[in-house]
Length: 205
Image (cartoon, rainbow, N blue to C red):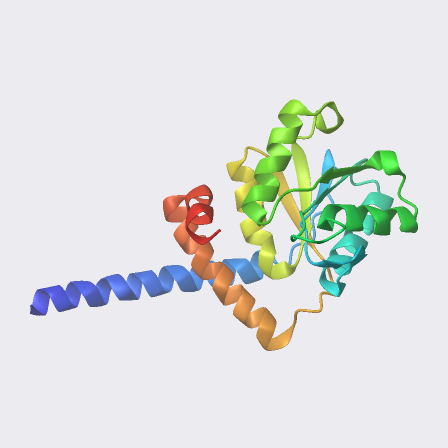
């Protein structure tokens, strides 16, 4: 029993260290701002209100717009589906907003059925393989919030994209909320690295 207790203690210590290091990695990666030239900018979806992006989504879209203006990529891929009864998807609301900023319709591509990070990037991968409008997209920069950068990047790489990330600088998520998000992401990523992001998505949705 004593040896079993010692073994359990060791496992808990190692596991806690592993999760702690992953949380730190979430924080570190969230401070990166890639501006390397790529094939497309991919914006991770967030809530929209009858065609109007939420503050969270708007912050991401403004960062994507900045990168597009800097000619980091010629195309912007907008992701995100909708809830039952919604007239707009997150992707379509994002497209409306970016057209208002001056981005031509032909530079905007939409993935309009996903409800999660994994689904969004999986669907984009499938569209690259089947939709001529998405053809040639291999190198991407993912625009999302700092706490979400590492998971998005690792998931995209699992989908065989050459992925970097860039975060929105004026996200409404800050303080204690941001800290909790970082911890939650760290725990999830630590588990996903063991079982795979696809299997984690099947468990958590």
